[in-house]
Image (tube, rainbow, N blue to C red; front, top):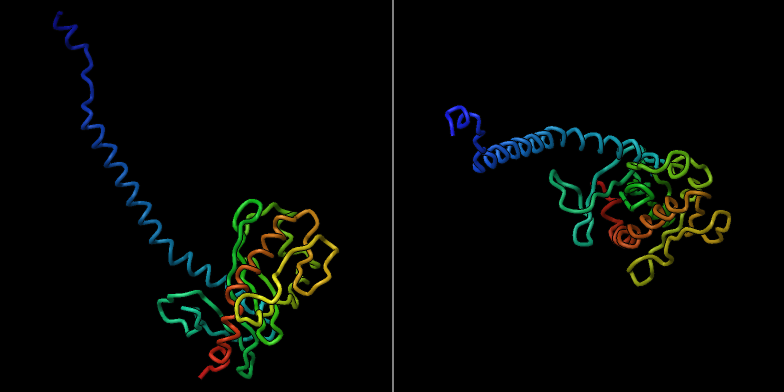
Length: 226
């Protein structure tokens, strides 16, 4: 083989060098992802709290102030700087009287998870309102859960009474075909948006089955602002 032929042969890139380069790229990419997350997390949390703040006074009629609590081991306690349990927001009127509490709930909809804030009145033992915090449902169909007046009326006084045993609800919150509601614990579904309507009913039922008895059993903690 001539000198010219020898020089024209391309030397293969060593596997070690390729792996080192790929490892460096992966490390840098990972650091950028972590850095972006740490930078944006405070903004995400701030936006979330602002959304809850706006929704809170809509789902607790008559409330003008709030106090943050958390549910820990079936007990309700004031929320600290680093909450350890399930967030619960109590709303009070101008005289400091408890008007209700608000909790988050979520369930899978047609396209994505639907997340809401809903208000519970422990005195009428009913749900007083819902506000969507996150949704990616089909425009004009699934998003009616936040716009359809007839559907919203379901939550003016949706029954959610605790069972006498102290566990769960007396009657499960269930969706029914549009126009066939006969009981105060039923949700009249939106025609053409059954999946989204069912998701709302499911999340309200699941959350209320678990937390309503705890709210009723710890009502004095919520009422006492001292």
